[in-house]
Image (cartoon, rainbow, N blue to C red):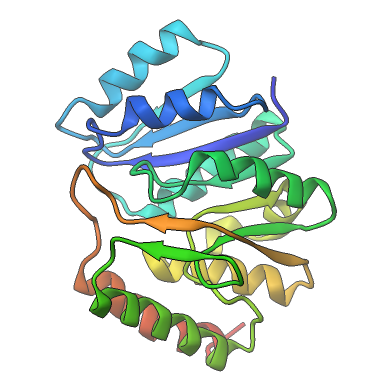
Length: 236
């Protein structure tokens, strides 16, 4: 068994899932993969099963009923991975916005002293490609807003490409993580930061998806905006 698990939530990612799995499996480090599929009607889970049959000791699948949210998928993945004894647990999207090759850098950062390594668009060396200006402005503005409200020194607090050491996740009450969209990413980093864990940012080039449909919607953005205030000023 590998010491590291890559967790990828999916909903209707049939156009991307085989390619992303093959790229991760081909890396020099033996990352195991856990796909958490929320009942994709396009056959995503079926394709994962086919690949898992070929590499049964590297590819795993959790099937859930209906869209239950990104945050709950990652929580399920964290619990599964901790139960299996993985030392490093990594969040990653299925749509190639997170470059698979940079998994090596996130892993190395945690091996070399970081408790959490964030694949960052907005740290020095990070980039965003193929986003319209309004979306980039909204994302960057949200990052500044989060830093201003929380005092957390993370330039890309909404990033979803993150490696956690197992002791970080074990220290958090995962059942008390409240948010499910972008605010989930902020909540995880903020609660880890509040416990004194060391967070480093690894620059990545973030590319907008080329295949499939974005899951972004107004309710996710609203949750992120109001969630930050609740995290900082609500009950601890």
